[in-house]
Image 1 (spheres, rainbow, N blue to C red):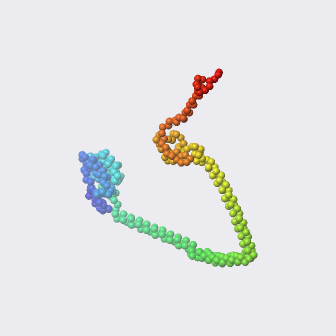
Image 2 (cartoon, helix red, strand yellow; image 1 turned 30 degrees about the horizontal axis):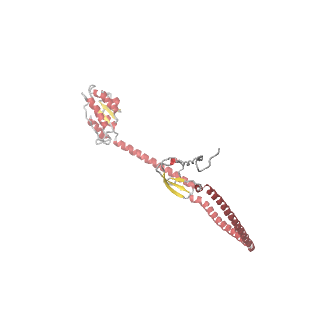
Image 3 (cartoon, rainbow, N blue to C red; image 1 turned 120 degrees about the horizontal axis):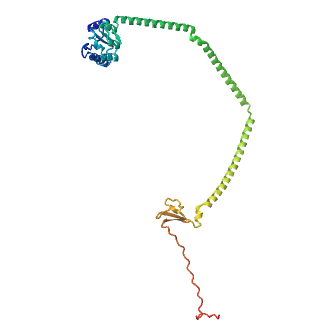
Length: 326
């Protein structure tokens, strides 16, 4: 059976074949068949042992009891779960097992399974060659038709250089006319300028000079008057501001017997809460500054007036004065 498959493959399309031998009948055969199917599916595509492109599960004919492993659930599930296309070739054409329904294709014999697995190499080469020839012929006809269409369009379009001859000549004529018109315009403007310059007389120029000198002198005099007035007004304003400043200056207050107390940073102390016992301060009078240290805040009592001696009445018995008759 295996030799029939190998011979048929060699005749049609020689390929590399992997064989996984398992028992196909008896106790434990179903599990080993399922393990072989799962093992082929577990191979890596680019591994050391390449994964096959198609699986053939095959055995020769036999009795119904001999074919029972291919009816087991484990085999049927393994065939249904196979990612590799699977061809069932169990028994002869009249034999039917459950794996036939779970596989991708059913072959009546193992030899027929080999024919399903690979095409005839010679026929395949002829088919590819025929289709290649037809492809090349179709491409050639397509290119020929497109080339003919391009030629026809070219003939209808005409020579592009001839299409541009007319516009090119018109452009040259316009450029020449523009150049001539520009020269004529410049000559006309020069003539107008010379005519206007010749119309100016010497007297007119002198009058313009005298008028300009008179305007300049008047402007100078007005400027001198305005400048003098502005300076005087500024002086008056400055005197007024200085008087106001003198009126509010604190030095005038010092002249009336007041003093300014400053801290070590030179800032004026405005409230008693701004001082502390033992801190150094400067007291500014009208004639200079003196240093001081803040002490305990004890009120200073005013000097009490000295009581006047009571006047004594003269003793009547004294010899120094005359007694009263009353």
